[in-house]
Length: 302
Ligand code: GUN
Image (cartoon, rainbow, N blue to C red; front, side):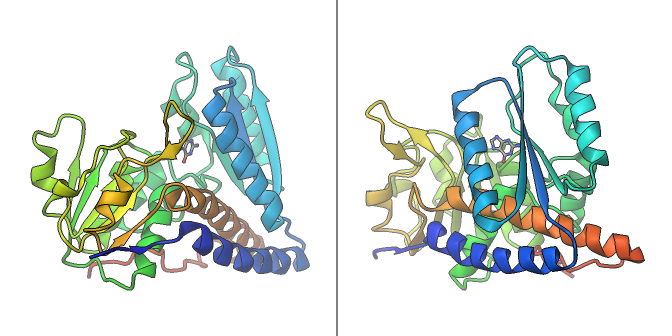
């Protein structure tokens, strides 16, 4: 079997056409959606990611505010910056790029972001809401993976879904979102013994380990859907995922490429969450706060 390719770049482009229409509708009602991106220090990878987020905002007509803080900035100054953004009515989404320098406690920074502007979905409130299936802002990477899975037309309910990687940003929320859709979920991580024993049972295999070449065909079930979240730069400059793409595509039914799979979707879902936030703010200003509850994309099992 040769897998069909799940094209994240094409899906992103399609979604962004719809975003521009939503931005126009909001602007016609006097709301200009705005996203603030806070970058502390000058981690080169973070600079690239932040640059992509700002570029996506420009492409979709979303106002963006890029705030660069020095690597030795105090915790108090970071918190004061977030507080200012929380109060800024022109800002609907606040994102603090991770990782942060070691002296800044990530948890305190994420908890300082208003839950109504937490477009990364990393605030404890939104993490808890993900557990109960009522998240307003699903974290962007797993949210993007969910839409990529939707494009296959395959229902995840009852399927064996194996997630490789247990990070707070990808693996854990991914597992919760798949569980919400009634998959049987296994989350593997660095301490998992005999990884292949788990991955070989996966109808849906999602790999977010940050290890190039980790997943070889012998670890993949014939006909599995394989989603590669990894983005690794090799010494020769090539960007590859965690999955041996050329070999695994001969065994999978569907597979995402790297680049052009999950990567563009992460940024696209950030814009989706920012627009959702702006739309909620508009309805709230109309005296409709919390009445606008739209079914979150993750559906309830009962
Ligand atoms: N660092 C790596 N991925 C992410 C992400 O999705 N959001 C933020 N804020 N930082 C990141």
